[in-house]
Amino acid sequence: LAENVAGVSAGAHSSVFLTLGTGVGGGIVIEGKLLHGAHGAGAEIGHIVLNRQETALCGCGKRGCAEQYCSATGIVRLAKLHLGKTDAPSALRGVENLTCKDIFDAAKAGDAQANAVLDQVYMYLGELLANICGVVNPETVVIGGGVIGGLLCANIDMEYTWLIATAISFIVLGLMKKILTLMGFYPEMLEMKTMLGNYLVYLALGLGICIMMVNPPFV
Picture 1 (cartoon, helix red, strand yellow):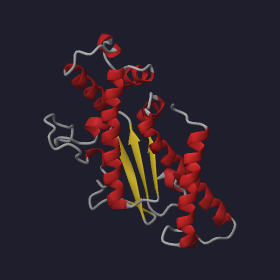
Picture 2 (picture 1 turned 120 degrees about the horizontal axis):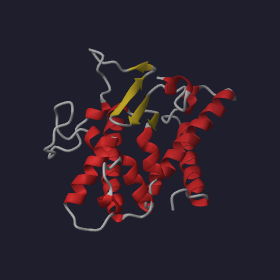
Picture 3 (picture 1 turned 60 degrees about the vertical axis):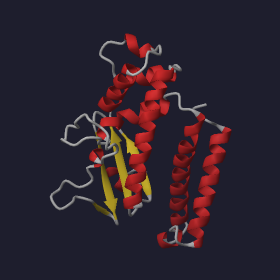
Picture 4 (picture 1 turned 60 degrees about the horizontal axis):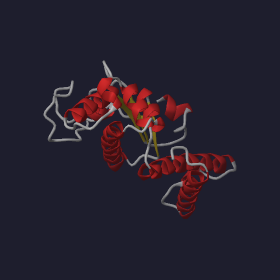
């Protein structure tokens, strides 16, 4: 809610906030109102099912929830499962009480098995965000929590840099809208359904790609 009032989503009519930590949580704002649900349990993002073939139980009692793959505990679980399926060497094998930070550090150092685990995390996280956006169609998506910093600081391959470029584009788009609003443009004039709104989106995407080409932070 604070992000929507005074943070990067300020002024957005519809937005999603996803927090990745020990668990996976978040909040959804639709048309300026926080989504509570009929009984106050709306926006249980962490318990959207991503894998119907999962056999392990989530803490909620279901199987295959996002929390089992995108949280700190979920990432450690994925790492242990992955290491149990391969004999390939990895710095993670000698770590007692494996933590999410250990996996991030190993990935950043180039450990192939740690990066293979994070590849799975990126896949599940991408699917989760796609599912949410397909239903909510938000103006902004904000990702926070202790895990996201580790994911962004890990050794992300070139195939993921387009995700960062897209994120930068959303930031640029938000800044341009705020500047134009201050200049006197009505917010309705800047929506994607208008010609000016479409031009802004294309411009923001172009600037995001240019920023990545000039200063790629992960390659």
